[in-house]
Length: 271
Image (tube, rainbow, N blue to C red; front, top):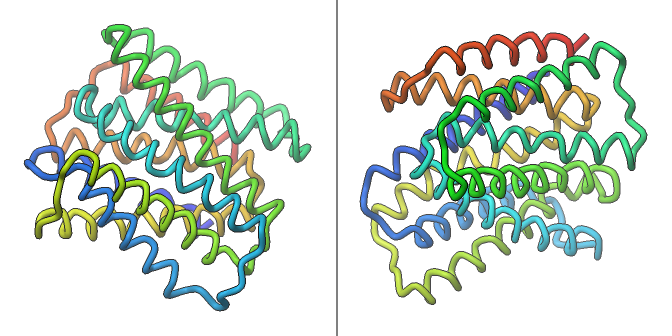
């Protein structure tokens, strides 16, 4: 369980660091590049061998593309919708890996866990219904939700098909691929790197790496139907509270109701 708690704290730190960077002028893709270079070097530090299996390379490259896509839409949505709403719908993507685990890996939940999943889904749909956002903003949220869910699913796919001992190699390939994609976009957009991008790169990159690492370690020790909903719902609450205290984002009655339902669903999912 300690790995799951660390994954939640790391994910929260990533979102808050991104939100803080939005208040400053900087190179977007330069920041992404520095972030993923930091992640790649951290992965390289834990690499025990230079041997790469084909499945590790393939899944790593695919995950790298999802990483840069997810970070781009997270940044865009935070700017338009705020950190609380973005985190809420990013974590709603938990149903992608949950359905994948049930349909492909036959990890079937208990009735109480099913009710917890249903309750968490209803709570987030209720919040979406109450939120006054237009079609464009809603589409960005839904797209980020899907990409976030696919990204989380990659950890489960690698945990099942890949070599757990090569997890650091998998992360190294993923982050290096994301860094290369970011660098290409930075050149296309004619952006550069200054000390500010380097600072944000470290602020985001360190917790970004450990959020993925600790999540994978959690999946090695706990069932997916427990890890994914708990990780998602707890991250929603911590990020929203940070948004309220640090960025003065409003938490209305609908959000409070959502948080209460989320906490109940987390309890049911861990029975």
